[in-house]
Structures are given as C-alpha cells and as structure tokens.
Picture 1: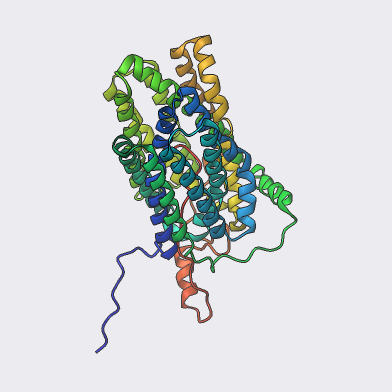
Picture 2 (picture 1 turned 120 degrees about the horizontal axis):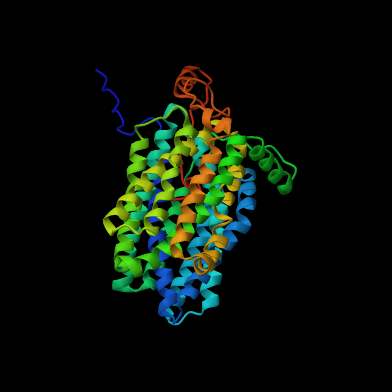
Length: 448
C-alpha cells in the first residue's frame, strides 16, 4: 500500500519566494516603524527641536526622490534579489552606525542626517526591485489575493512595530531600537538572499541606463490609466501627508487633548489598512481601477474631520474608513500593474509610480506652515480635502480608468505570468518549466 503524500495547508499561489519575502517584509516593518519613532526621539534627546526632526526626515526623503528612477532602471537590469539584498545591507550598516552614535552619546545633527540619507538611498533601490519581484512571480486569478495578504501582513507588522518601538524607546532608549532595526535589516537581507529567480527570463542587453529610463517613461506615458493615476497621487499623497504630518498634531494639541488622541487616530488608520487588505482577499472587483479610484475619495475625509474638528471618536472612525479605502485602491492598483505591464519593465514603471507619489511631499509639508499663516488652519485643511476630491474626480474622466477590467482566463502581460488554468496545463506537459512561485515586498509606493 502506498501512503498518500501529505497535502500542504499553504495555498498554491503562496510559493517559496512568496513565503520568504512576506516573512522578510514582516521583519523589516516591525523594525522600521519603531525606528521612525526612535529617530525622532534621538534628535530631541540630543537637544534638537521640531525643526531638527523635520531636517532628519527630509534627509531621508530627498535621496529617495533623487535615486528612485535610477533604482528602477538598475532593478530591471540586474537580478532583483541582488539589488534588494544590497539595499538591505546598506540600511543595516547605516542604522547600526546611527545606533552606535546614539548609544555613545550626543550625536550631531549632520551625522544623523547623513546616516538617515543613506537609508533613503537604500530604499530608493530596494522599493522598485521589490515591487517588480512581487509582480513578476504571482500568477493567475489569485494574484490580487496574494497582494492583499502580503499587504495585510505588512500593515499588521507596521502597527505592531510602532507600538513595540514606542514602548522600547520609553524603556530602553532610542539607541537600542535603532540597533534592533539594523538587526532586522540583516535578517531580512539573509532571507531574501535565498530567493529563487530561475523563473525570470534573463535580461537582454540594453542600450544603457538612460535608454532604460526613456523606455520606462514611454511605458508610463503610453498608458493613460497609468500616467493619470500617478499624476493624481502626486497631489493626493502630498496634501494628505501635509494634513497628517503638520496640521494633525497641531489640531490634536489645540483641540483634542494632545498626542494621545492623535496616536489613537493614527492607530485607527493602521487598523483600517489591515481591514481593507482582509476585505480584498475576498472581493475581486471586475473594473479594477474604477473601484479603486472611487475609494480614493474617502482620503479627503481626515482633512475635513480635522477642519471641523470632530471629537476623537469621530476622527478615529474617519481614519479607519480611510485606511480601509486606501487598501482597496492599493490592491486594485497592484493587480492592474501586474496584469498590464510587461515583466521586464515592472521595476522601471514602479519607480516612476513611486516618484510621482513622493516627489511633491517635501514641497507640500514645507508649504503647510505658510498656508496656515496666510489662510488659517481650517481653510487650509478644507483646501486639502477639496484637492483630493477634485483630482480624483478628474481621473474618472479617463476612459481607461473607468473601463480597465480584470482578466481571469487569459495570459497576463508577461509570458512567465500565466493564469492558474494555463499553469496547470503547462505543468502536465513533459517538457514544461515549473510554474513561477509567488513573492513579494515593496507594495505600491503609496499611502499606507
């Protein structure tokens, strides 16, 4: 008698790469969200003020903006997992040096800015490579479920990391939290070094880095649904970021009772992102971008709630709903990119997407203070809400945004990304290559 092979409880789309990358994403998000809190307190403990905290934050954002497009081109030219591991190594070294400075006592502002900037460089190369890695490997009708599960794990780890990091800063100090983040990057890089990229076709020799960037630009501008939503989110991310990073703490201090209520509201947003990802594991809207774009409208609600301002309970409810909404958009967007963009151009296109999302954030946050002085805080917040509504409504006039539909029974954009039915047929052929396994990391460079 033969003993039947044990059946795996893991879904068929959750292959070896998917498992490795999801585990790595959980580790890095646990560390990084705590490190964001630790970095701010490290600056304050060294005698800095709120302006110095902003300078350190800007030192991370500026290299991210400058190197994103180059990072996307490099990730489409070299093996993506090598780019990811190298970026993790740079983040590990920079955070370890930051931790050592803080633990040694009295780090200087320029040193903290330099090391944080190196972290931004690492993220610029890591993000496009990771997003391309995910999309090139997930296949078939379950792709959106894989994206949703990955995002749910990532958002949950971020929530836990922020809570744990805040506690560790209070008990142990910011230096040890930064050291833990450095160790997390080391562990994540080790996990990613075991990725299997044999299913990804070898890159053909190209015409150089600039030619790759031009090719990626043509890919973006040739798809109205793509460039219009990237343009939309360059405004949405900027004004929402300004409202939540500048006006939110001020409203909380003056109207809601301090940092505690604002932390509760941000926690509700994080819980909403987890709930939205859970929802998208079960819901598969046929018109991907139409459903996703409709869910961008609720992102105007937090600015409006701060303008009123709503009581803490109402603000938390609004933040929760906006968290759910952004995840519906995020999963829909990733599914559309996976379906429509050729595999060999995924990282370049993802880099332009990320660039559009972050490029205007420093400008918007810098203008938030002058806008408050010129127009008042409440009118400025209503203006943020109005901008979100206006640019989102404008995108709905693009026919491709309204009409792009989910494909379920045909081959997706790249030859190695096939539907479940096609993969099963290929597997039964004597000489068929193995079906690609799923992997992940670096969800849409967007809110949440």
